Amino acid sequence: MTDRPGTGRPRVSIGATERLGARTSRADLAALLVGHLDDSRTYRLPVAVSS
Image 1 (cartoon, rainbow, N blue to C red):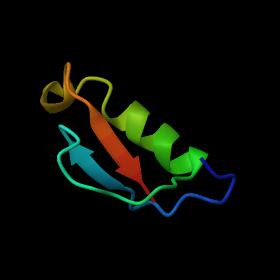
Image 2: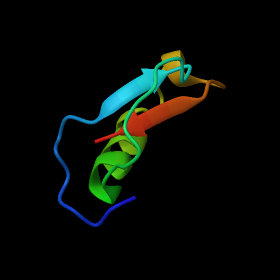
Image 3: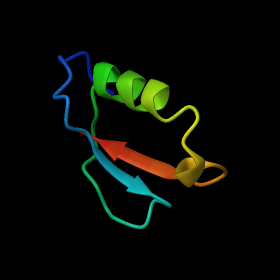
């Protein structure tokens, strides 16, 4: 995780089936988590995130 500003376009793999980059900003991860709190597509699935 980095302290860089968020890109606003994080790369996401629901089910973690795709290989993504090794880093993400804290801002992008936080926005993604808040945005998917009630998303049934991510319930009980691994989610890979990268900026």
